Image (cartoon, rainbow, N blue to C red; front, side, top):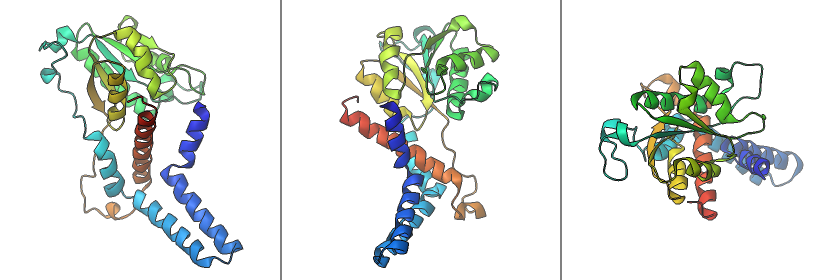
Length: 263
């Protein structure tokens, strides 16, 4: 079921959908008399592909997700119960995994995906700012066979985090699973939730639905180009398409979670 969902999501992703529309148009032009329909499909697919490649467009879409939660400010965090001393009251830092590479011959730090690596760095930073805190790494076994949390913990150890300060949750297989297993660890205690900024809205809603008390600590925010009027901003790019893919994935995830009553 999980693999089927991923296949369908990839099939209808922005890039795939644009290519599929163009391909259908070409087939109609080559093997059908409906030349006008074929031209419309090719033009539509091309316009959608070019539009999604502009960071000024796809970036604005993903910012609608990222802007919902600002970067964490530890001096202003007031957990449930009204305690103002964060360093004494927040014990847990939950870091959500986001995949690992499949090549087991590579060093651990290279096997961790970009988003997982960024999240882990933020989790370690917060852990060092909060004496006595523990990092919960959550992420089970994917298609590669090794639990994501285990791989991330080995990277964290190489970066100086004590193994005793980490708790590994290796059962979850998808975003919706994280709250179910984390709940058994933190119970009703507030915790800092670390994940990518674009992923934070869905993650917070899923945790809150389970009666948990996450304190958002988004990371990996998209940074707009420094010079808007630079030549590169007038051309579509692969990074723009990637932003469109991320935004599509998150909004589809939110829709699915809402339909299934998970948020």
